Length: 231
Image 1: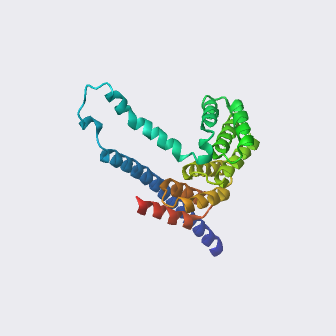
Image 2: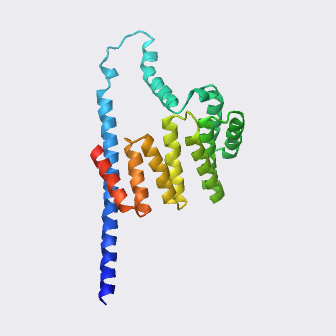
Image 3: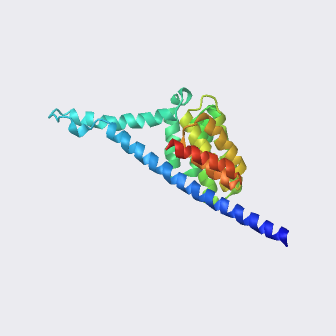
């Protein structure tokens, strides 16, 4: 009877600990979001205001005012494009537009053709992974989901893959692995990503969640504390 009481007490304690850690994970996630909004707002405040600048009647003024948005777009493009992909950028963009339109089967063919011709193209492999990903959701196919996971993995392994593209691919890969019921594998992916992007709060938060799902409560507690300290 004493043994049964001890077991019940231990089970109750573990349950309480898991609930506390879950609430801690939620709290840290909220803090990470708030920090992201705060820093974005702070960065916006630090940028020089275009409204404070004098307006001229010169017709070229409109062109000047539109320049910042173009620079921002180019910066985003450069974050996910290496020198290899710059040579085939137009072809990549055409295939990506097909995927954006929801023409998944056609996009799969285009990205596969690009990979056949340019096997070291990170964006072509990422596009193929996204196409398999979307197709797996439409057809609810585990086989296609596995193909998307393999394609995302290939992106991160390619030489000279831009860090931002690697982050996008590995985050989505971990998400798909977790959806597939493979949280320990998702943890492995996020731990590798954390090593190359140690200051990324989103990566740490997701890693903490996957630690919890894998039953690694102490590791989850430690990573959530790091996120709190960062914010």
